Image (cartoon, rainbow, N blue to C red):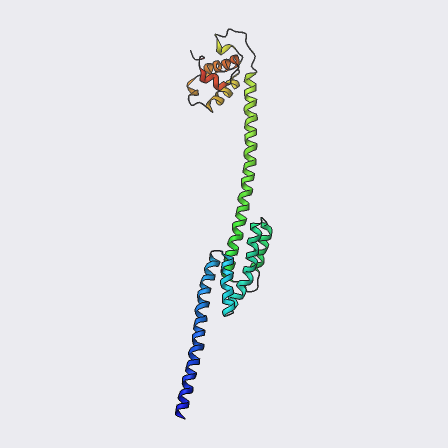
Length: 224
């Protein structure tokens, strides 16, 4: 009788060890996959997180794994939409993931970060477009203004004097001289060294030789 009891005890012990070992093994699998799943979520690797949470759900179902899988399904679809160029659909899927019942704070944090980043990118893109348009308008305005200034002094009437008297060859007004000086200063640093008489000479040379103001200034001959 004692021998039978001893045998039964041994059998029960083996059964306990087997079931206990399985439980420990499951716990190790769940713990390892949970760590990897959470790390994947933090790195926004939705597909990888999905695989690890699925292993947990298959081994030892939990609220976290079930809810996370529901959210990740939307996020994977959202990334597919983004790759296809459908930003609106992507945003909708991300919003749907946020509104899953009992949604996980860890996943929600990453969803909100992605949506905020997308919103900032759109704002920057709009600012760049607006800035580009403004720059073009400013450039066109400056070009028109410069063209108008050039035309004003280039249409100055001849005084009919000798070309040896360059400063008085044309009837340049003070505003004409100022405009020509400003034009030259955009390219040359030493323009202010010369007085208005010299600037008039440059203007006259430009008109007589039919060259630009800058070429006339750079070529010289007017400051002899």
